[in-house]
Length: 284
Image (cartoon, rainbow, N blue to C red; front, top):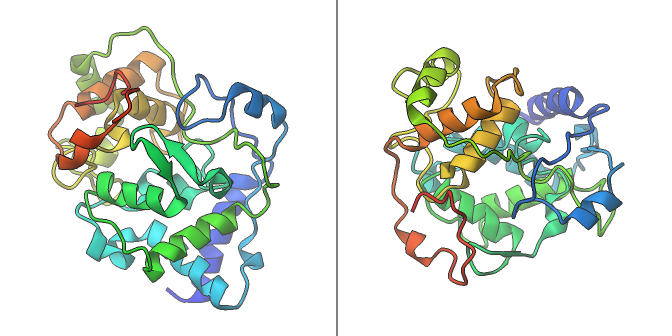
């Protein structure tokens, strides 16, 4: 993929996702969203990622372009560090430009950040490696890896229009709050009605969409393995291009169905939440 092709694809994504885009309000608080006071202080903040035309033509620009490639085609550019069939953009939709799907825009401003699951401060590079180990069922990129620093450079570039000290109201995924008891049996019906065309009857994915369970999908240690996180992602983004069309209870049910299917283990899970605070929907 040459430089002009990358720029053209990025421009199409930016235009489709960013022009006039103000993300919906978060439905509940979470570890992945700002505090209420921070969110209120930036309620009029615009989701305004930079244009690909602003990528510099120097070494930094090459880093940014490689970071973009790592995100959209992790299977090719990061294959040494990936243990399943996913790409970063399968969760961070549209190369991190979708404000309803854990967007990268503005995220670099929030690091270093205390991560409750790890029980310590984490750098942006640390958090990226967490995703490689958990969501991609792979291994960490070396700290001095050109590919790791390129992903950081790409995320920093996407955050360049955000004033220092800003909160990021679209951080994470719009979270659902429900007293509904997730029903995986009904979730199976919802999956067959609304998900099977893209993800396959066996959940192993198709040419259109990635696997959602089994050895080629995300591991038990991934955020998406939590029913509440998966339900929120499904509600906001699925079926692809028709987000917000699944009912809240359906989203919880299908998330329960998907997340009770087999998936890779994460042996290091025994070290999670060392200081407490484990979510009730953690699968282990």
